[in-house]
Image 1: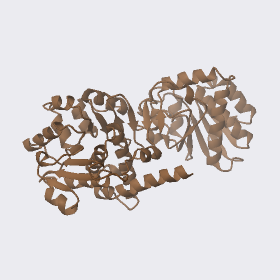
Image 2: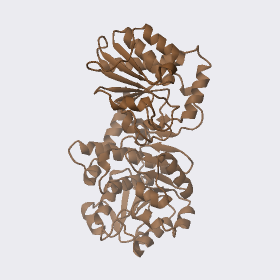
Image 3: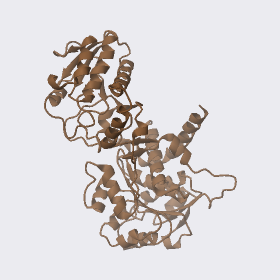
Image 4: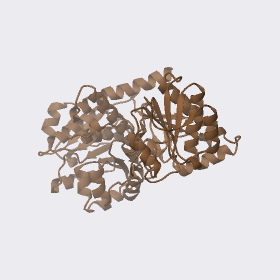
Length: 481
């Protein structure tokens, strides 16, 4: 498991750690790690051409010291300074004494650019000379120092021009902009360097990131005493005469999950039983036998019959996933009381437009904060779908999924996700954990499906089992190692 921390937490931790170390030690740790990564990217350091983009803060100091290390190994390193009078004084002296030079224009091929324009203390769009530097960058790999310059560190927003890095070397801990929001596309490959900061980071993380080992460790597995009921029974109130495919796709997601039995209650019962003879069908929620979790809304419709089905699900004493049409039926507030007085967990799975209808405003620049606000208001876990899906719990924890892919932006993939999520919920997992796991596996399935060409929801559903198997196999291999 990884965690991303806010700027205030990082700066407080840095102050505590620097108080225990000789002056400059922390910067030298960062600069050495940065120089090492640059050297690996260059391959052959001697004779290579490196340009440093250097701002006035400690971020620029990191770049200058790293440039000094590279210059000492025979690289031709030049520093392009936004304000020579405000550059990190000791870093600049060390850089020049190591053979580094002040930039006087791009000459010949540039092998590497190091972005040290602004650090985590900056806010708002890039300004002044820093913006002009972006206008004439030559074609070369870019390594960002701690964060790509121009992104909002705590939210992941990109308010204006910003560096697009191929690699970001970040120090001590992840920052939110490296895992969520449009800033992710600017970070490239993120390499986290341990500089001794972790023991000094206090307070809860801004965002948590589950790794494959976490998903595998949490995955429910049957034992010798298990039967189909003890493994969990999931019910799906999805699909309709108008949208039978949504019912089929949600069932496809559910049968790939760990639940022992799937019950379907809806207008696509004939198609469902023909495709999945292992699924028990009924025409309505009221006629379905007992389940341990419900999925409601995918292709359900928004008429009076659909509303009655949603009320039946909300009135049940088991966890529920509410997606698509179920979210639309919640918007007018007529079911708000049923939702808020439920004792059993609820997971809401909106995309941005559904979120805006539910919350009365778009997620905005800070997607994690927006999801947490809706989770608190509805007393539900919120799975805010997107390239980097955010899962927010009503207790105030936020998670971000890093396996997502733009290939999931196609019709029906959300139905598959809801079915898988319901199957996980039916096993008794906490709602936030089930949501994190479902998003992770769903993203992995999309990546597997994309290997064979354009992705549809059908291919994503078919790739769920391989994605689960791969996850469990990777974790097992890691344990053996």
